[in-house]
Image (tube, rainbow, N blue to C red; front, side):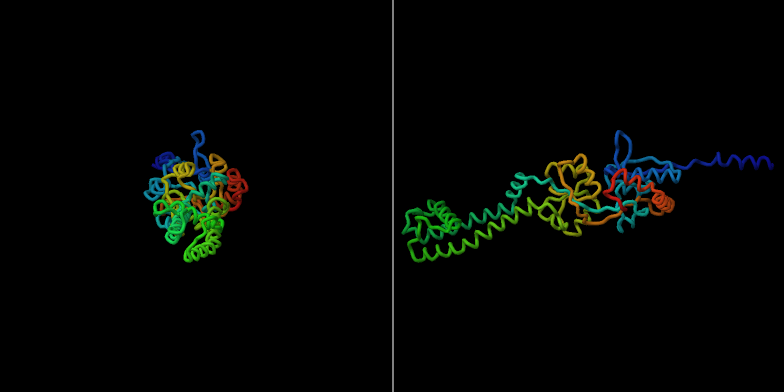
Length: 351
């Protein structure tokens, strides 16, 4: 009997079921998670591999089409962990757990490269400038027709009726406002002369204000190289991904924007000119500008909203404490710094 009991004890480790392989969810977000030649790689996946090795965890990568789908898998318990550029927020913390922060970054903006003549032309054709020019044309026509009413019996230049006088009256008003000179069309009536003098005096202010307004609009739309505040994006077509913390941030700041289901769709819209500015995670935009987006956009240095990325886990996950201890351990032994340097160099030298 004792021999049988000892035999059972010896066989228990063999009979015990092997630990289940973990399912790790991710989404394509270079340089945090991507596929190169069919292999899963990226900063977050390399960091997870180091954590899994330290904890002797077996796992499979499951790549989702969108960020919301990946997070939904964590909420539903369909995945044991999610790694990418996942921002830790109070709202998400109510639906899932997070490891301690693994990366510190923030929201940045990509704008089209300085475009010289093209940028100036685009600014000149902006709705605001077109509206100003249209208003000026209407105003000059009205002023010219007022002079026609006053001078139609004294000047052959304006023509006998309103239809034939429209363009000569407009041209007279335009010439007067630009040059301040009547030419050979000096008003003959006392009221006409008084009105002409008033126009000459007003032209000094009107032309100056009009030119200043146009110059300011061209400068802000085409020549400005920096965005000091996120609200400086007002008036531009801004894009980001749907369900992202960047979208929440833009909404909170009252910045109108379009959302796209995936990062690829957002980038395609930017390159096609559908959106003029992309607001998103800084490291992702920096990687885009330095690689496939080289020459297609410029990254604004300013970070508008500081964010911390973490590993997402189902609520109550037993892995959380082990993962946190391992993160601290690989920070202390230099493994974390080596992984970070391999992907970002000195650009993001601090967490």
